[in-house]
Length: 162
Image (tube, rainbow, N blue to C red; front, side, top):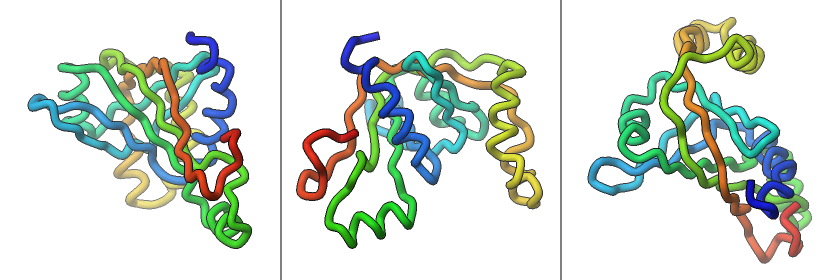
């Protein structure tokens, strides 16, 4: 793990935790064009890696099989965060982060990974739509990150994004 990036990993994970919606995973298509896919099942580990459940993402999967490079972006879209920031004219923390790295091949999820996704989606599975979207998880792709860049709005942020 690169030194500075690894030292900031806890801050990166905090920004991702505050993200209230799906994360966006950017990949490169067969023609070299960028493609962005929203993924609500990205999990970060302690060691600058993570994984996501590779369900319903045929185009993303095809892109990653050809070129494993990714950029994952998380943005804090919480109403209270934005209201407080707009009222005070200042973001107290980084509002988002871009993570750069690679995705591994599709593989069966472990019991621990299945448990993690179950904890995240269990309330939504009480609804018909939630059961349709989040009931058949079985495969993941590992993510290995090598760099991050915080999303910044310099006029409203302190010099340190943390």
